[in-house]
Length: 196
Image (cartoon, rainbow, N blue to C red; front, side, top):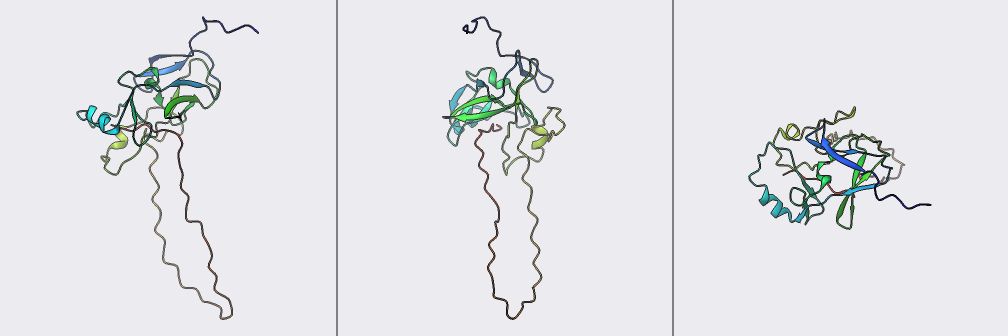
């Protein structure tokens, strides 16, 4: 078996995108599970990231900030690489993976040459978001199941429980305490990109 040629075609290129600005496009087939690129940039605290972009127009949904954890944000606007140009998609062909506090973009399925790479940004919603936050972070991915926003899907409000009607008890039936599962906590293991 011969070693790989050092002149092999690059995996992807950055060029204009129909989704938004620039995008990252496959130049050759990328197999499912391939770590395509690491998301690089200045690693800063949330406070410093907020300070850097304090003068940013609140109606500008463009961001290169990527939340790694509660303490760290990657600012790809400073010393970033091509990963900052991977656009959002509601039916993504990639996902982000947090490995040892490093963020990688991994292929979710086999990607063919010419396809644009995309992952779901899952930008967090906050209680103090403006009413037009979904317009600011509008999605233009064009997928059939597009949710119209780069923000995570809004949480469904639980219906208030109606007061149950009192039941007639049988005189001889013993009382029982029936256990019920109320809900479950979902822990996401992928890093999220946060708006600024």
